[in-house]
Structures are given as C-alpha cells and as structure tokens.
Length: 70
Image 1 (cartoon, one colour):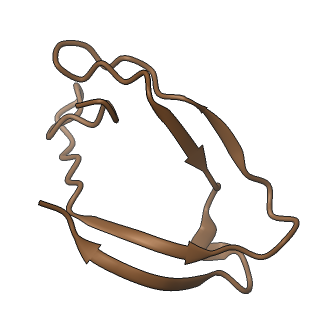
Image 2 (cartoon, rainbow, N blue to C red; image 1 turned 180 degrees about the vertical axis):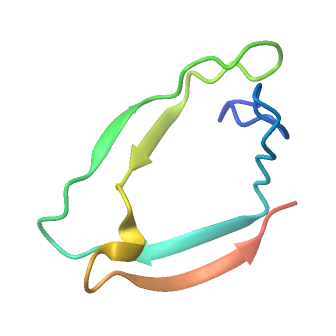
C-alpha cells in the first residue's frame, strides 16, 4: 500500500507484484529518485522510489538475486 501498487490499475490491467530483485547497474547509468504518488484509496504512496528506465536494455546489468514476495 505504501508503494501505491494496487492489484489492478484503474484501466483494468493487472499489476501483480510478486518478485523482488537485487540488481547490479553499471556506473554512469541514469538513476531517478523521487516520491511515489498517491493512487487513491488504500494506495497512498509517499515513500521513496528509484527508477532505472528499461534496465533490460542496458549492457552490463546483472540480476544478483531474486525472491518471492509474500
């Protein structure tokens, strides 16, 4: 709820969040930091977020670890 990700977006698209990832990003990659916006109702946001645009397209990105979220 503090990450403002509802199970379904207002347009009806599913928003499953079931896996966490630790990744290694090459030096010099643009990284954006900010605060999550409120998505309405229980999904209040307000916590920090880090965004790396299309990391799967960045040469040298490495998944270090992944785990199932409860």
